[in-house]
Length: 52
Image 1 (cartoon, helix red, strand yellow):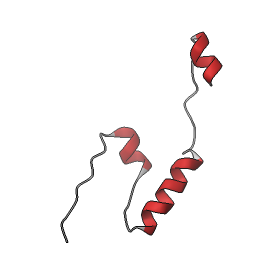
Image 2 (cartoon, rainbow, N blue to C red; image 1 turned 30 degrees about the horizontal axis):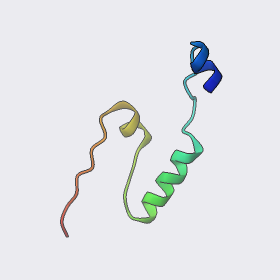
Image 3 (spheres, rainbow, N blue to C red; image 1 turned 180 degrees about the vertical axis):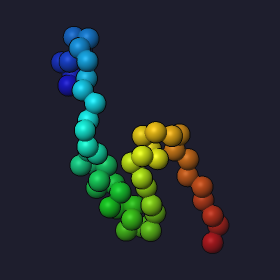
Image 4 (tube, rainbow, N blue to C red; image 1 turned 120 degrees about the horizontal axis):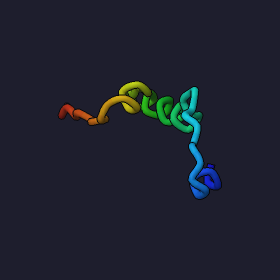
């Protein structure tokens, strides 16, 4: 990928969610936070916090 970016080639769009993102989602679910790949990929992601 680095060579492709340096030479000016096109970087392919991933067909699936990267494993690092899946791990992040798993850890956030452990903390009772929900994260959706579509939400992050398609829209501006904002975190709304509620004071408990």
